[in-house]
Length: 270
View (spheres, rainbow, N blue to C red):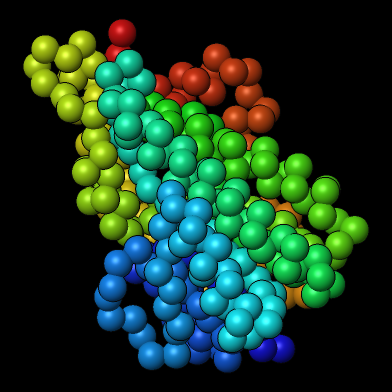
């Protein structure tokens, strides 16, 4: 069944691949970008900045004027900061939370009346493995994703009677432009920074994990199957077996033991 789909952040990575596959599957796809760029034929593009409520309202209005409905909202767009909690610039923190969480909330609040009035819909929110466990030197990224987890669980119960489904996606490491994009929002680090050595050591591991991750098309194909499914789950952890095991261990091991596992992986030293 052809659906009208609004997906944020299609300039690269997950969003680009997902929009391409959904359009190829026959759906009517509207993808958002922050700046003009060439996008595949078959995908309708909209300018949207998650930190600008006017652009959010305009994007939703544009879809409704052309299609009269929005069947699926995929909240893919986001950003990724990195650095020590103590020294990361305040404006990086605000942009992280405003983009990943508040921007998503604002868009959902615009779409919910539409889905209520049309008798249902599906909202797919991108969290992360980092939304299930705090990651060193990615504290505010993890915080934004933890917020998405709690928000989505609450939203799911509030909109159930309106036949609106809320689905969480928790990707593990994927080979995207994430590392390159985060470098523009790394806390300044110098030899005089008390966190410098540990931050540098851990960042190398983070970026190595991302470089060795799966290709975005793997996740994109999964999203297409979820959109087309009539029996969707509340949450999908899309990651390597090792990362799925880490999620399980987080909930069954004593906290101190699990923390030791993470510290070992990220080479956290006293």
